[in-house]
Picture 1 (cartoon, rainbow, N blue to C red):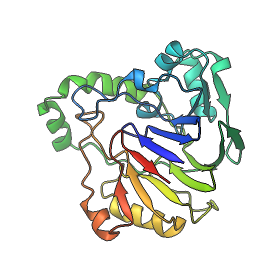
Picture 2: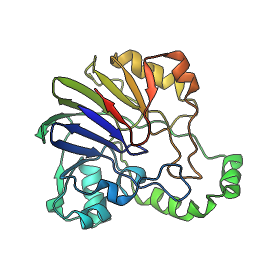
Picture 3: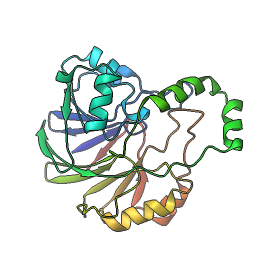
Picture 4: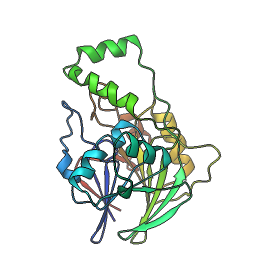
Length: 253
């Protein structure tokens, strides 16, 4: 199995000739990541982890460009993509927590995940946004932020192919009561969303016990709200075990 990170939470998985894509998102102007909408053309199967704008806002345009694509998602995303995004129902596949499906050589299982606890935007942070060279993105960012609602439906995907298993989290948090599988060959950890990202990362790694960890969602794809996350603390805590994904580079599982 091969994985390619296209920025934010956009993960492409390859297995032989099969390809699937998770959470495609086109970065805002000013981001260091230069993924564009055409990079996501040609996929027949897309998966959504949750209904926040940096995971779903580009799906309506992708369906227009790729009218045969099928988007797999839970009910909150399904209903909003159909009603707000005007995506035809024939392009949407409703998933439920606990489901297992097979597509393009992959077996995909769903667990109920949980979103990270986002830090509050205090006065100093808001002031910094409006001083940023990317401040022109603020109206778009706010519009998209209030347009989409995650509704506590964040998916934890287990992806299996070619004898390997990858755990892909939609956000860096887990439900206390959930019985998640352990020992994945690789955990894709979205290292973002908390005032201090290291403590929740440690809790997750210790709970899931993966064989290796790669970090996504640490980049600056919707400035000025996002800036690159400091990865040094988690890399220092897990030397040789935790590594950041690099935009457009392949990870072999």
